[in-house]
Length: 426
Image (cartoon, rainbow, N blue to C red; front, side, top):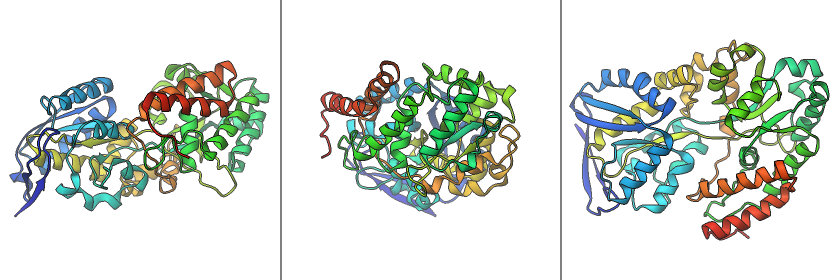
């Protein structure tokens, strides 16, 4: 028994349909495939997934090439520009990068719906999988990790300052709590160095830098509301400029900040680089703009795409399918690498719901998992990275040069329009 599908456009330079067969018997799927991935995901695929995968698919030889994130994108762009030559059979791509390739190249990635992946669509959060579809609604990359956001905070500092995190329901509550903590410690309440906080606050309202049809939407009413909250934080002396990633880690390590409104993947860095503060961190949900409002957002996450030029799509597909839908593998990725799964079934596993000693002996991962159904989907448009670079510069002007938060939206939108040529939403 075989599943036979037709794929159109193998590689951006090909137009003839191509027949792909996926035998029902795993042992009949054979051949070599190459995977490009970086850092934790490469380790996950090679060490957590591959041993179990080969038990089911013994005749597929998978070679995972560990390549830096920038190099992956450079090599992918170069390969697509010459018709798909030199590309792997499977490649890790971040959600916010996927459409930069679909916008620039014709059919760069295989339509996974035609290989049967659409049967898994409901197994993932809508906010994750919606960002991995082409303009026709086809899934073009298999969803891997997710970055649900919450407020990671110092339990000891909150207790000393007399702040009860369970009472923090809105951003106004958060700001008032921050004033108490800053008065107690003489230090900051949160640290930042780029536009992440702004993007988190936008997605919490179901908004982003782009509308669903790809127009610029940086100065929307929701963006102005987010800017107003951030301006209040700065005016209250709550924000510490941390310069870069290492500076952010140092601020947490040295008790310069008491909170980090950040993604769950911060846990891996904290366990590795801040072990001395074990037991002193916990998490509460993002505050809402109004009481009873949405308290969820996302930052980060990647997927696995099959370049249309792959010579062994059947083997590439079953490996991608296994790596993204096998529950035990997802849990290994979380416990071994700190990679938070987007597969909803994984959230019911005991490892994910267990209390974590480092995080105040609380079910840290479950708290993040509980926010996932509330994360609103947004449009990570092809020009995302260009706009994020502009908005990071604007945000730094806000932090370091006292530029008003609302002004950075107006100027950032104008500069983004000039640089990208995108129309501004009315």
